[in-house]
Amino acid sequence: MNDFLNSTSAVPELVGTRKIGDTIGMCIPSVDSLLLDQLHVTKRYSVLGVLSARSGAGPHIMAMDEAVKATNTEVIDIELPRDTKGGAGHGSLILIGGYDPSDVRSAINVALDTLSTTFGDVYNSAAGHLELQFTARAAGACHAAFGAPEGKAYGLICGAPAGIGVVMADTAIKTASVNVLSFASPAHGTSFSNEGMVHISGDSGAVRQAVKAGREVGLKLLGDMGEKPVNDFPSYIK
Image 1 (cartoon, one colour):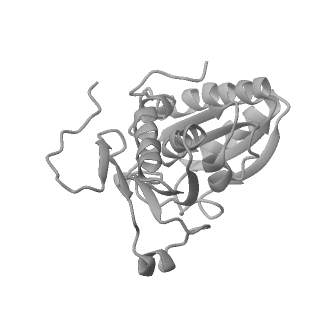
Image 2 (tube, rainbow, N blue to C red):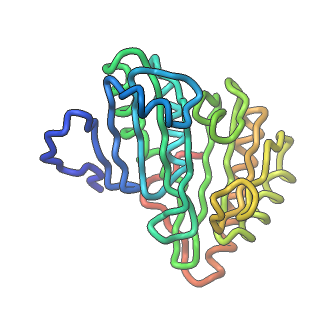
Image 3 (cartoon, rainbow, N blue to C red):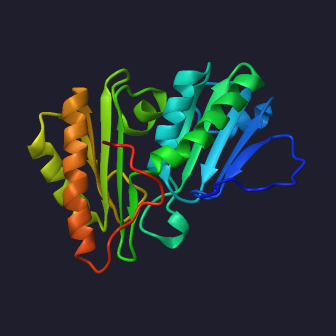
């Protein structure tokens, strides 16, 4: 699958785009101070990177987590709009900061190139979707978005409609000894999306095992609603 978009734009801020998630990555080498005053950022950087998408908040956050590990940049804001092009979940707006435009552009490129991996465990059907994420070492994006302890394994287990997410979370937590960071539902922790998702941390092997158990039951439940959920990219959680 060709996930790149051909762009004839001459806008210098453009870093790149991807069809997956309807994603665009941009870099502002010298952000206007008046705008910076109004942005909800945790730190003031003159150079801003922007990763924005219509769907796939979790994959974008995980991709950016890898990006900040590989570059001299820092996540300074993450917002989850109620979007998914009318579906059950979120879109994303992620801002990063740095001191060198080349570092910020590099981070955005890393994130864009990682999306085909982090979308590997997103499963869709007409009835809903599932999302699973895992990293052996969480960094700034996972911490900023989900409260994941940096340097420790982190897992996300999500189901839509939200009730499936509740059962997935219960199964995952019973499967392995993990720390439960939080559970997000339509009225608590999401932008009123029809999702249930649990955030877990702990030993890498236990977190991976819990995520896989949640995925197994989620695929069965969502499949029982009419059609087999499918992923567009190869699964990366083995």
